[in-house]
Amino acid sequence: LVEQWFGVMVDRGVPLNVQHYNVVISACGRAGDAERAELWLRRLQAEADVEHAESLEPTCRSYTTAAKAYALRGKWQDTERIFADMESRGLALDAWGLSVLLSSYLRGRGSRRLPMTSTRARGEAAFRKHVAADLEVTWPPLRALRGLIGKSRFEELCAELKVDLASVPE
Image (tube, rainbow, N blue to C red; front, side):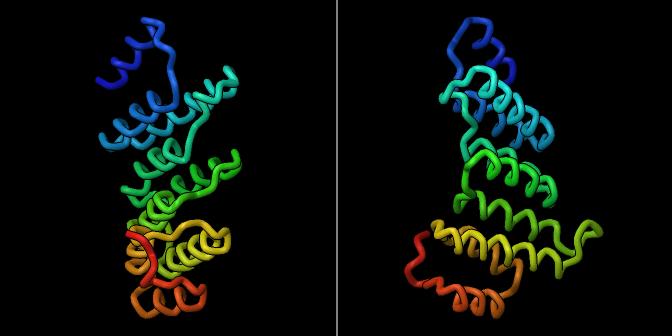
């Protein structure tokens, strides 16, 4: 339905922007169709490249929404791939993106795709990178990290990285 709505907008000459695409990406993701969500992200990228319009540049929200559809299925490789593409375009992973990435490891851990120790290591590495870049740390990714690596390792890592849990915003 949302894709039909988008088509009507195109047919009527409505000037499109990134928010219109984000709605379609989100709807596909909520429907459990990660591949289609990514297809719409790629369409947005192509439009931005052709039109050279700032209003069509994919945002962190565009990438994170598409990545979340994969993360919900534990498809950490696809989640990582989308975020790597985002970073190659000069966008930094925000707290919501970190939460999505960590949840992809959490959902994919212990599967044949990735041993549990590897998911923990990947999660720790992502968190270290985020903190080293001096990006905001909030409780949603911290909860995902704690679930991934366990309470004691979580506390050790936060102490090591000097993350003051008492001052972290919700």
